[in-house]
Image 1 (tube, rainbow, N blue to C red):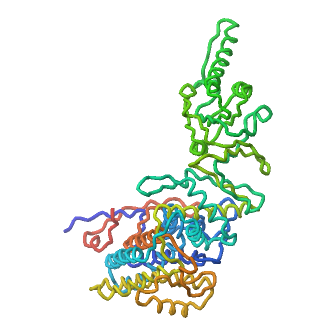
Image 2 (cartoon, helix red, strand yellow):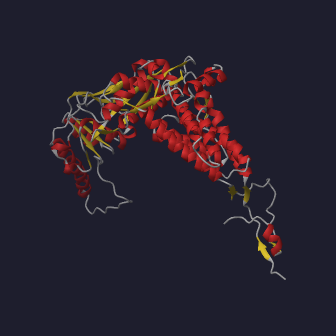
Image 3 (cartoon, rainbow, N blue to C red):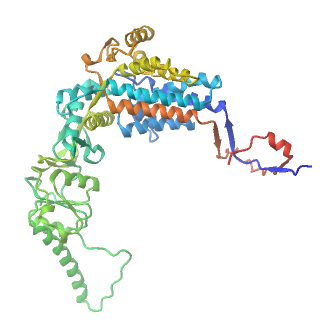
Length: 557
């Protein structure tokens, strides 16, 4: 007689096999369908209600998916793709989801025919290698210093966005900002840190045409004592501090026992002398403007204003770093350590202006600034938020080109060339991998197909004509003009994409599709919520014979 085996049934729920594959593919297709209509110029916009009850109107793939509250794990990982794409290259957030959704959709037929997911993934990875080789072949190098070409490229990349109706404005702002903060790394390489050194300041009011890139920094602060301190200084000497200009308070509660009455006066005098000492150390360098990240006491304010020095307090650390980069100053931790070399003399003008209801401090006209501020004006907050999203994309595209100055054709031409080349290559592949490889080639056509759909032209005729033009891997620059729906040469229309963006889109989409295909089990450890009032019913451990236990699907540890 076999010894009985104890199997404990707990709150783990499990789905496995092809059921999971189908569920994952359906969830991914659902996510792709949500944002499919936002691909291309003049595409649909989505209106989103966020958790706080605010409204977001946008056609930016990442901004839409960010607001979605989805429970399915596969759909969540699809949304993560869009976020990764946005952080890495800043553009192609919609394309990557549409492409990944299509790759999973074509894989479904093979899952139904009992193909092993690993075989499909192998074919997809081979297709990825070949598609990157095609990109390298059709890519065209450009001169980063040729402003007209750069402008055309940034314009074509943000032509699909809401702000494309304002002409060159956003492309100009993005190019000016990124070229200003670019740093030479040597060997002809340049690095542009958009997040750290470009600040976008949105000020409602005025017209969008009033937006501009400042050769310096804009801070949403006023000086400490408006009546006594100067609000306009030309060629200011700027000192940046990271310490409070007030008497140090004890860490915890501090008790001081005073024996004589005069000691109280001595104590106050010591505090005053300490602050006076700090101010004198600063004033030794004859500054015109002192900015600190911490507090600034009334007494320190008195000493500084008496010496004709303007002061700003409680500035954000990130803003302080930007000011340092713009005017060539060094942020100092202790006034005792100040040196002449720490003082910023690169700024041409310090001025405090009132815009709307708020005061803004401008530190502008800097010599060779390595940080800048983009001032955006516009009618409403919603409009400004959308313009900011588009500007971030435009700046990312400009950064990608500066880092890797190579172009590929836009308007679905690249995808069609890749698709045609993969179809040709598929004949030389042996074994079962041939079919998924060919299916991957077909999946790439999802991008031009979606562009044609969103433009409202006859999809079948357009796609057939395009496939005919690309049949033997020639005419790499023939694609769809998203504005008119006509089949044209992308070089003539100046519809381009950055090489980095396309390569990242293909890599992210194919790797994500492979990852989702290789999932064959979803094991959830979340306890199902009971109906209110229903008490917990403890389950007795079940004793089963060993024979029964063998047939049972064991829960993986």
